[in-house]
Amino acid sequence: MTARRTLLAALSGLGLMGCAHAGAYEDFFRAIEVDNGEAVAALLRRGFDPNTRNARRDPALVVALHGESPKAAAALLQARGLQVNARNGKGETALMMAALRGNLPAARTLIARGADINQEGWAPLHYAASCTTDDAAPMVALLLEHHAYIDAASPNGTTPLMMAVRYGASDAARLLVREGADPMVKNERGLNALDFARQAGRDDMAELIQTALRRRPQPPAQRGRW
Image (cartoon, rainbow, N blue to C red; front, top):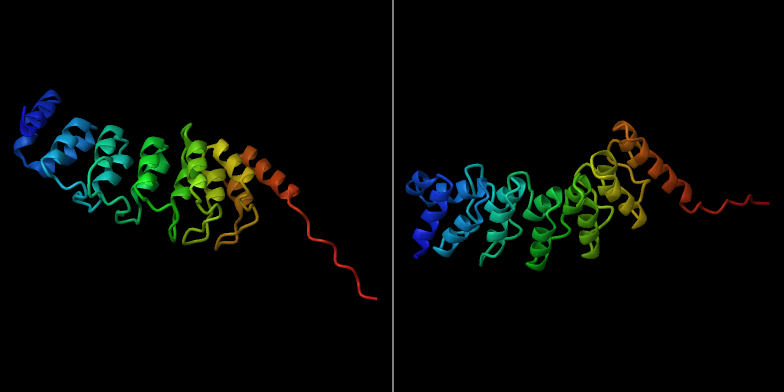
């Protein structure tokens, strides 16, 4: 069976045969939308560019990961010439999307292919800290294992710990604290992680930060001069 017939068969099975005549571009992003990895792979084998952007100028892999289309993302991640650090209009990369969705297999593959762990501004660790799935803590651990800067500052000074205690999974916040995230860092508004937890009404996270603050070494007392 030719690659074209493989693609048509895959689309036909989803009731998308009509889309196949609308052009490869439409086929490609429709296959991503419905998470048809086989159709995406077939188009790539025909020479379709894996770095194609949609109408909003979002890279295909970012679209697949943001839209939680793991089969389509997996097919794209195998493509030669894939630009793993391509960004969308908001400056988001595929690794940031994988981190937000808790997609560990995609994150591991991206890292192996040279995805940026650290970058100026919002970083993948911020997104992992915001994740609410069961894979949030393992994702944070993965990024830290690959030398993610634990107190990375966003453009307004927000750290991953601040994101975790306000939006993310409790286990991820606890992991960040255990690994040494600084609870005293303040953002441009003068807010620290404790403020973020209190604003979100997360009493368990506020207690986590308060405990971390109590355990911090205290500076030696200054002796008076005689």
